[in-house]
Length: 116
Image (cartoon, rainbow, N blue to C red; front, top):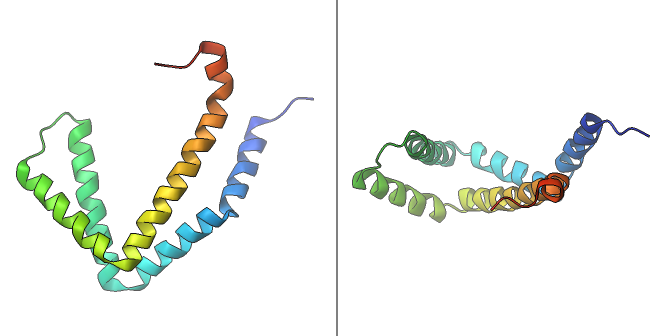
């Protein structure tokens, strides 16, 4: 019996959407967006993160001022209970996705051996 990998992937998507981790993430995101001040703070934080990641990917240096701005932004958002809950939920979901990725990649690792 041939298995359609795309059907299996779609079933995995449905399982993720119905998981408690995903629903907690979704609720935390809605909570952040429900308050304009919190939403703006979070979007500013994400913009700083994306700018730094983009510079790193392009091999550009990150200035001390940019590092300090990022540190201040992290400290500020961590003090916000809604954003802090969202970040914790994001971290849990990221771990789940990482674990799923390990399971998905297992056949290739067995075939080729683990990449070092």
